[in-house]
Image (cartoon, rainbow, N blue to C red):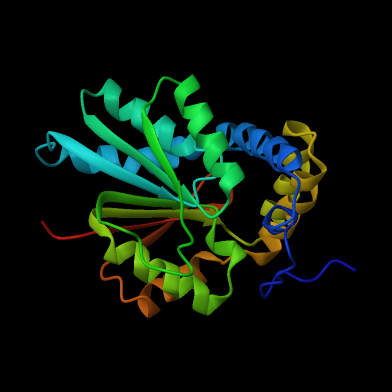
Length: 238
C-alpha cells in the first residue's frame, strides 16, 4: 500500500548507497540531468540572483557554490547565464560522492565552464570557506529534520550574500509527475525508484519554512515554483 502524504515517509534511496557501482551512478546522473532540464532547475536558481542584481550594482565577480551538486548541471547552467550578462563567476560545486564530483568536472569542461568541484560531506563538517552565493537543490529531502536544520545552518553561515535552496514539495500531483517524468526522461532503474521515494520524503513548503526558523535564517522566504517544488531564498544585508 502506498503510504499517505500527510507526513514524510523516508526510504533509503538507491543513489545514496555507498557501494553503488560507478557506472550505475553515472547513468542515474545522466537521467537527472534530463529531468533537471525539463523542470527548469537552472532558472529556479538563476532568477533570484538575476532579480537582485537588477536592483543593485553588480559586483565585479561572484563566487557561487552548489552544495550536493550531483551532475553539476545546475551550477554550470547558472554560470553560463551569469557570464552572458557580463558577470565574472567563480564556479564551485561539492558532493559527498567521488563519482558525482568526477562526473560534474567532466561535464563542466564539456560545457566550456571552468569549475572547481570537490568532495565534501556537509553533514559532517562546515564548509571550508564563504561564498557570495550558496545554492543547494534536491538534497534536503534525503535528510531527517535535525540533519536538514544542520545543513541549512551551515549553508547560511558560509553565505556572504544570497542563499538559495530548492527542493520537492510533497503532494499527490508531485508524486504523479515524479513517477511519469522519471520514466519518460530516464532509462535508469535507480531514477525510477528514487523519484517517487524523493517526493514521499520531501518537506512541504510549510515544513521548509519551519526548518529555516530552526536554522535561525532571518527573513527567509519559501515560495512555490514549478513543477511542485519550493524555493527558499535568504539574503544577507550588505
